[in-house]
Length: 359
Length: 257
Image (cartoon, rainbow over all chains, first blue to last red):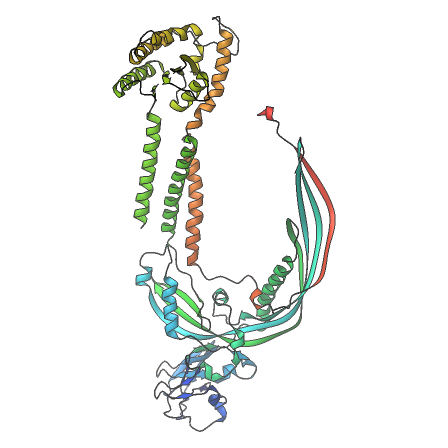
């Protein structure tokens, strides 16, 4: 059975949690607050951790292959057995509710370089959901009333951050069009040019979602995160939240980073092609020099709602509050409104045509 | 909300259709801006004119004006024809009371009327001292004249049984041209589906742009927000002229129109 880490209150032994407002650890039982650094290396600090009871299973309760893709942990508080996804890095005990961190998931090579602590709490996420609903049109009848919030959880999502200096060059076919007329003819002169541009451009901390469980579009939609507020990783920040270790390797993520970087370089070069009436890009090439990557945990609030048996997932940037999530659209209502508005505009156009003719 | 919009649109369309039908139904047969006739007299004269139109398919219009503005009587008559009727065949008389002159305009098959027939109609009007009496005689005579009108001359073959064939042919040509001009005051119903189609397209774009706000999850297109400030340095730039081509199009000639 793997080992877990619980941040214990030195006063009462209760399980402490990271407090968003104070940006410190707080004991929900005795309200004591502690600096994050006090929990820097808990594995070396044997004193004041309260009970140290390990309930290891003696018998082979899981059949061979049954725990594939899962890990089994023993809760240090109640001894309950916690079965979690093999990538789960932080969760809560289903029996006593204590927050636990799977130490092995964030040690050695798996240790994140940075973590952006949560700046917004669960209440802010709930309010953001309500605000997100406001002003939305053509939503199926009953969605807002019957749509129940099933789950709301703060998750540290693993991200790979890519920093690089890029050298990009691009070729374009450009045109200048000149028009003039004489008594008998209209003339159009089109001058064709071969345009070349190259540049050096640098990018800092381009994030790519390192968790296969998280939809990539959902994670990219809540960007950007302010990396200047990131701090060195400390397991204490995970207290009270869920966390996964990455399960998509950096090699698999780099392609997506290159794609975005190349598009940005292309845009930057195209912006320098001026003085032409139009141009087409014929070729864009990019070389990345001195590329480095980091492993970071980004704070995300995930909200799951259920309506008519279907789940809807919303996400909020736990740092900036940017909220996203698709709301279903009533296609019949859209069609009906399009037809009605179309008929109205058509009638107005016909009426205007009459007025113009009559005037 | 949808019901309200639906009700407003239906009301607008009803108003539009009523306005269109009303404008189509209201015909002016006797135009008397100087009030030489009473309302009841005009109504009675309209009755005569309507029966002529029903029986023979000709709009017979009479304008009694004291001033034609900058137009001649003939131009005024043509303008009145465009303004007052959609009929294919029309006879429009204009009497300028101040100058004591008259002229006329003939539309469609009415172009076959010769000067003699026109004079007969005018004389019927002119013989009576009162406007109402004159116009009553005018409409009665017009009905007789139209009933006994000579056949329309075939302008293609040039065969003519009347002395004024040439004149009739010219007038028929003019009438054909004037027919197009005469439709200035109306919008063909064929434009209804066109307007509806344009409206549907605009409505579809507007409604879908509103509905698209429900979708907020999408992949980022680039990493521009992560560009290091001031890091973009242009290291190479070349603009090479290749060739130019000139396209020449002849201007449309005015006489081709």
